[in-house]
Length: 132
Image (tube, rainbow, N blue to C red; front, side, top):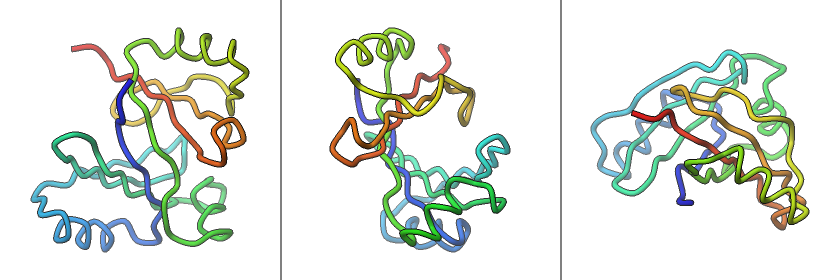
């Protein structure tokens, strides 16, 4: 596995993307809305990972609830795996608890989340990108 991205909850994804672009010296930012998760994301590609800025698109979004409770900041880290089903099975065998089943994520990925209690308070996403 490797780090895929770090996700940051923000109030305004467009404005936050400008700040991160300048701070990180990055020219290109991709925007995507993920209706099923209730978020609009700005994806900033770095050499070894991505930063994903996330803004809620509705009041039911988990990101809206996070922002209301904790304010802007680090939401989760994501780990990339070639075999998400196998990793989930392996991790469950070690006592790791997941928040729901594997489901579609951005850009055709498969994703699932590890309960923060399993990794000392850190919400962690497992993701598997489509082949090709």
